[in-house]
Length: 240
Image 1 (cartoon, rainbow, N blue to C red):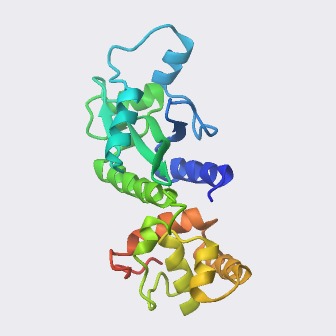
Image 2: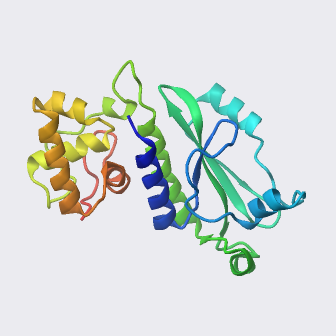
Image 3: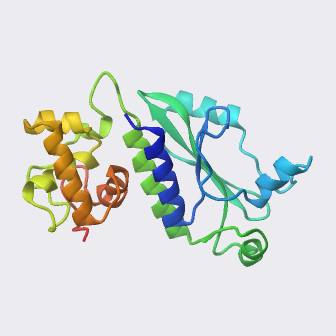
């Protein structure tokens, strides 16, 4: 299972590496983790002043929850207000049930007419469309991996990597195999069972993998290396 500490680490790393502030919220919109960045202007106004900005296209949580309960889609919902401030929610499922969302309170696109003013006055991040799309793709991968099914192996592990899968030339063949299975969403216990070794051995392999690749934990490993695998479990490119 994924603990609160691992989720907090991922949230902080995502905000740091992409400059996109996100926080995990429940189905009612209540925060579940410590915010990774300060409140944006819109949130400050909402919590400090009895006023709703006419330019903000607020996300109706009841409608959003109803939509994802019905569709079980992993597609994030992105909205933009009249002033060019964009926000989004990405659904988080567990055992097939909607548990909450990764929520971004605000950023602005580089081609927005007021991007520079919003950044200068309210410290809103400025992102290109490509940078945002790439970051959101990484977040969706994590959402898939968090949807652990208790009655079966995780969905992504249904597509197992080829035995000759190469995540990085820095790793041994066995380490590449372990890293690939982690990127498919398998737990240490599942990997140990598949490879007929102990969980202690898998933990040793992971320690070596983290050290060689310069990643902190399995969450960062998945974020940085799972995108190199195609649907057949083969590496599309070598991530150095």
